[in-house]
Length: 167
Ligand code: MN
Image 1: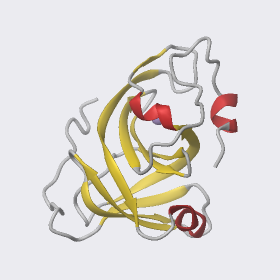
Image 2 (image 1 turned 45 degrees about the vertical axis):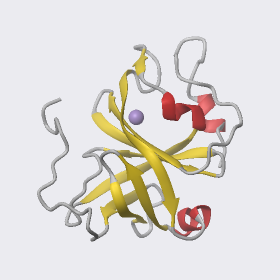
Image 3 (image 1 turned 30 degrees about the vertical axis):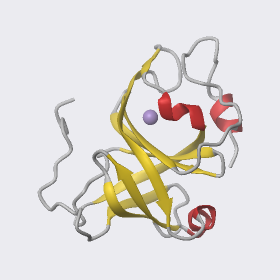
């Protein structure tokens, strides 16, 4: 877990995103709606002092029958959980970022080991996302995972992400 790649990609004198300083909040998640060249949702879980991050083109779902691709990207600093705003044109990820959901993240077992193993189960306590979820890495692919809602009382078979397909 390191912020080296995150920092390499950005010029912090030209983007309002945080450079990242060490801190600990313990157990948060955030989902940021990112209107970049392609709309996607950045799904971030706090693990060992950084936000381990996936870009989810279709966004998370509360429907256990949907398995949405989640492409792992570089770890982000914890302060990124509060970031909203405009990343200026010409910078990595240029476009608007807004917080779509956030709350607490409770891993089942050790989260870092789950990420290395390619299977992470966890509970989210957010405004929109609640209950059990799993991230499962596709075989032989290091970056491609599936984000899946577990079947539990929070599951919703007619759930739709707002604005999907509109922007
Ligand atoms: Mn993004």
